[in-house]
Image 1: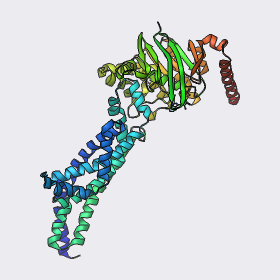
Image 2 (image 1 turned 135 degrees about the vertical axis):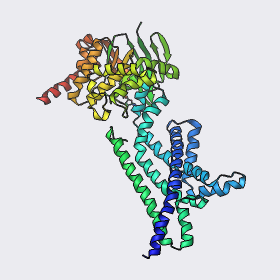
Image 3 (image 1 turned 90 degrees about the vertical axis):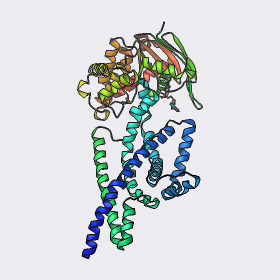
Image 4 (image 1 turned 180 degrees about the vertical axis):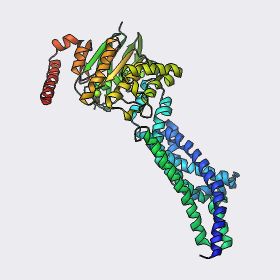
Length: 224
Length: 256
Ligand SMILES: Nc1ncnc2c1ncn2[C@@H]1O[C@H](COP(=O)(O)OP(=O)(O)O)[C@@H](O)[C@H]1O
Ligand SMILES: [Mg+2]
């Protein structure tokens, strides 16, 4: 490896890592938080079989899971301005990632809710709690615990998916890498480098996931 | 006046008629044992009485108030559930809560009791079932017998007027049934009103004061415990008791 390439990689490492820390990770964290809120709501209206809302929930999941994330980004960022709805790149990315991830996590959480034995709800109602109280204090916490590994996987996948935001002008890691490639003509080395930084992020998150799973297991039953 | 009565409780699952008009009355302080072969509708009866199943017909009179079982309001269901408690065959302890939290949950959350007071009551309830040293254990860290005793503590903590038990010992290993039955016997001695579906003949004979024999969704015979066992009127009751004593025999034989 030439010395010039080496120093390019070292310099660019920090140039790429910085938007990783200031854009990729915050974008993931904010979007995933919104996604979880959406997912819990969408899972609960199905679990509780609320008349109209559950059909809306199914429709939402059907549309979002059946269309590419990249298309969704384009519709919101390049499409909506045509009908007068202008959203900046970063809020548009957060909006699309939240709604997209929300659909997948909703399915995870719904399955986890269904896996909580019905006796838990019955016991809660028998000690006088209302349906909502049992959901909030007994059923949902157990479901979230069951769902934890799958949700953690979704979070890790999302870190990588945020690279798609480069397509709607968000200056995240991949966009910055593309810019460096444009003037340095070192696509192979630089794209591998950004890939390794994603790998680093995901490795740390996987460690956190394992730690979390152990923590959840030490105090009691094994989900499911 | 009886504390609790139900009249002509009916329930079908699809084409299967499980309860064909069951009548039942419980006086305050009664320990009523419900006996009957498997599939006769005992669980369904208890579940209808606590509205875990919606009966197709029938009426409940609780403390002199009348409720139509098939169209009782949500509000009345909530009110009645606060006067009753239910002990399940498979305990159904809240898996994400410790033994102590299992007991306080119904007090703090459902009855809005101050935390300190709820903890006092819960500790006393757990002490009563002999589990003071297990307060911070999760259900998965307890034996079946211990779990069922926590469930009983959870039931008595809410100071119910009646406790429904659905075969509280039948999910337990034989060597663990004794500890649960001892707790129930103690409750009965203190005057707790109990409606107990059971296969434990010694409990029905020695602890309950009244026995109801249910078969194919109908009451075949009911009476005070003594005469029920000594001189059953119905041939079907006698046949049922014979099969049971047969089982007890073979159990004893296989033990030796
Ligand atoms: N949720 C249900 N759906 C359909 N059939 C049921 C349901 N619950 C109970 N049954 C049927 O009703 C009958 C009575 O059941 P159950 O009340 O559990 O009897 P027991 O407790 O006396 O053994 C059985 O034939 C059982 O299969
Ligand atoms: Mg049963």
